[in-house]
Length: 599
Image (cartoon, rainbow, N blue to C red; front, side, top):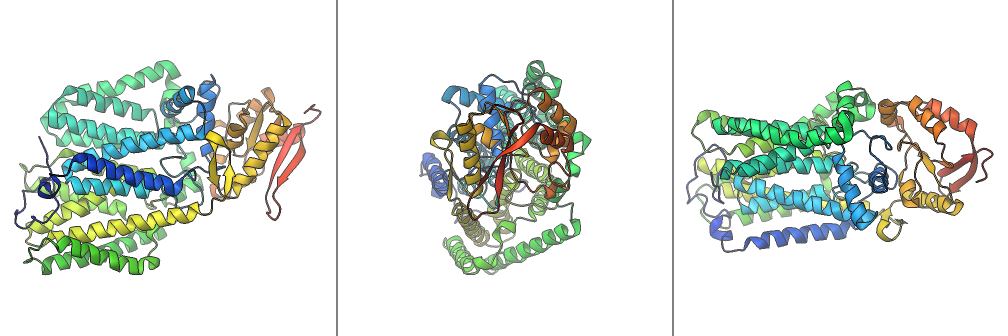
């Protein structure tokens, strides 16, 4: 089934052409080459790169691990054997390949991640346009780039697509979208190659993280089911293609490595830590539900105004309805922008997706012959499934940079195209709402870029140099002091506790044990006894102690609330050698060396 720019909300007939004549469709865009769309999106990406240049990574939390592991793999170590790992094998080996080809460097990995982001944006655009039109697809893609691709909305970096806290999440979401896009292409063209590519993408997604795989599987099955008998007949060969990369992984990495995080997820012990319960909103469900309902009410009132205006303007045929509505919306929101906590505004995103999905399914139920692309339902299911990890605490920042992105894009399409179409069919002026929504999205994106800029201004420290150069906050100065000390002392191996493997990576000094982080989740996954045994067998030349508040995990500090066996062994075997401080700052990194060691 072919789609074009005149495609309307799935499940409904074409609106009156006179009512919808002023909407941007083939009459306006047909003469503009499609390359212009790509060029303008490239401009958006370049501007965001410039705004956030070298400020993507966090100096202590998570991202050092994302650099260290592919570096060690590129040097010949093996995942799961030499490096204790808890996710699937795909992303780290892809990154190791980049390092083998171009050399280890934060800039190398950043460039690779920029390519992943660009590919994801392209897939999103190709997936969304058949459900809407060129303009809506462009707006949704640009919105994804600005709000989710490069954003920083909390003090810890790493929640962006250039330096993600986990490459498994960005690679997984990208593969989930590719899976849907290929499946949609198969349904339109009938070419078996696209069905095979969709299955292959799903199988590769299994080798990343649990969340994107479960979401991709649910969305793909929904698409096949809603495709009718043809889709259901394609299920078996699609599953066979999905099984291929999983089977290869089982041969290469074994069943345990292939399963990745599945055992820990199924056990549920890590998810019970206060940090993860708070992330889902389960620490204070009543408050989080209240916040969600409050923001839903705000959005309802905000959308009611343009909908009422669309009714009042129902007899208007001017092509200026959308531009005027958009301009008024932008001017109003800019006037009150300082009163709005923009980064909290997507709290009811799961409700938006549910309502839009309900409208799609209700349309199919009313008209069994309706033209309803299954990919519209699938995209909604994907977004909703990914949001389940944030259940009552949906947000743009933190995990939301990846988990909320598909749902946000789905909602953009629903508000910018499907809702105006529905109003047109009821005799109202849908262009008024379309203009208001586009104006709202423009201000929303601008305000998120402004918040990101404010965080970037705090990054005053230079960490690393050359291909490893990055801008960080003051914590980066302490990391650099530790790196300089390790290099000057000539240590052949170090361990950084409880986290901070960025020191290992920048100093190019390995940890002699299998373990990288020594935080409460890792203790649950691997065990304090295993840590102690690994250190006894391969003691590092020095240990770097980085102050870390672990109260968010509900376990107390390292050596007291958890990790007591390893901490006791360290106290017996190591002695203080240096305290790295910066004048005027109440913070210090401690260096310990082995007792009676010549170093």
